[in-house]
Amino acid sequence: MKVADIMQTTVETIGPDDTVADAVTTIAEQHISGLPVVDQRRHLIGVISSTDVLQLLSEVTDPERRGNILESTTVREIMTAKPVTVDPDADVHEAARQMLYGEIHRLFVEFDGELVGVVTQSDIVGVVAGAKL
Amino acid sequence: MRVADIMRTNLKTIDAEASVADAVAALTEYGVSALPVLDRHGRAVGVCSTRDIIAAEARCHDPVAREQLFEKTLVLEVMTPWPTTAHPDEDVRAVAKRLLEEKVQRLFVEEKGALVGVVSQTDIVAAVAATRV
Image (cartoon, rainbow over all chains, first blue to last red):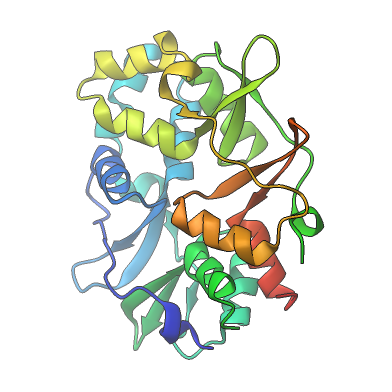
């Protein structure tokens, strides 16, 4: 089974100059754990996850600054640049290995340098649940 | 394959009366996405996950509310009530299905009323990566 068979093709994205507060709103509304960061040409340049947000919050100890930190920080400042990507033709086992070794919950799927999908841990769990491997 | 074959047993926990700031610090320090919440008698009463904290953050619309959330809000107030659990002898495919149906990243594992471990989507992805399922 290939990544293209199980990936999601509707992917919420965010821009690098949006605020972390914007990212938190989208992450909470969409019930997802990470958002791809894309430039104006829809090229993938990073990923921002709920873990990145918690890390930011845990590093600020000054109460006044902490209240404003999500609004005053841009996505670019805390995103992980150059996230791991996978080819749509890659095997699902290979995608699982990449997630495991990268300690990540999602892989972005790129074709010809453009973001075409995302495959998450839940998509792989779904394969196990359906015993389609 | 059974849950006992892939579950993790070294569980970190947090007190129901700890602050949200304590939970953020614990989640980032332990590098986990959720902590079982124990009451003063050591009973599991809920789960506090990064998702719960991001959702609570998203509900705060100003710096004052955000700081209140951090310092004045108890884990008890943002946690998800204690969810359904898995059994060590349960089949991994059945658990995979439950993770997706219940839309959760993990199920805690109980045996005879005692909390003995946790099985997460990551553990199932690891089994796929090792081509064990």
